[in-house]
Image (cartoon, rainbow, N blue to C red; front, side, top):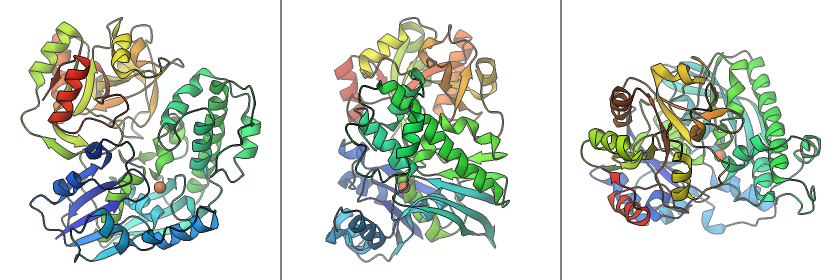
Length: 483
Ligand SMILES: [Fe+2]
């Protein structure tokens, strides 16, 4: 029996297929197929990929549509009558496919919680979910454990709309001229360049309903960097307050953290002050709730070994070709194997570069054309990470770029260090992944166990998905992409 989990209809549509042995058969993002960033609808080619050769026996939807519609009506957004039931949304989203398959609906925050807990290594955990808003909840705390092999959840605390950390951060993102629900990570990066001189003012407005954004005349003349820095401080204070409360329930010293706010890797650096062990799934935002909803319908533990779960570019990983190219030209792309589930390129759809090269940041920026102040991320052999970075030891999985650590030698590796001396690190354990093999050969060849890793995408588009995308990238930028 196979279960299809769906998160779609709002933003960042995604699907996940699991079987009743708890194995993930496929998980993918719609935007990678439609080339429309944050696409709210499921692309036709994604339906083909999820269903190829598979029977779907059950469909699990990631939230309760009528509750969302009620909240939207309450907040003055009106009711979308075509989205009042999961049945009507799924019929529309799946374009008539699987029309006779039974459907279950699951609460938005519980889907986040299950996507985290049931992919975690824990038997028992405190679960914290923080996002913008789904139905009515904007932050929740849960107890979670397995009873006779089935995950059981009990909500311990909730915060309701309109008060919302996610909406606050998105409102600030919009106020400084960026794209809300899409470019919060740029706000986070910009914060390192500012002073948190407006934290009192932002603390005050954070208590208000910010769904419609901040007033245009708020903080006239203030530097964007200072607003971003102040917002980050306020955001962290609110997150840590919830973490403190979650720990005080005394349920477990294990934390599972989900929801879009869990992508704030700068705030995540201090979570070890509240919990002993922490799991954040690689896709903690709404798209990961496709897997969460499927997990709830299934009930048991999901085997989560890696995030390579999407569209497959077949063939062996081009280890030797990539390293040979990097030795000579310092920069190349790789698009091989299954696409990553989650917002980060982790080696299967990556632009890789030599972090020691003095001109490398300019060269990568010439391709990516993103803000020059933003650093790139390092990917490093796990056993060497402490030679370069002061990163959390043991309490959080660092394989998915979810936490920052201080770089010991920013002078040697400026392209992968932020202005505040931190890096968003991806460690690679001793597994058989393609990126592991590339790093091992790169280390044996050069003595450097680290590469620069940024997502392989054409500017303004989502990450490369298939070979045709990789070819377009190659032609557009004149950069070799190996498959
Ligand atoms: Fe959410």
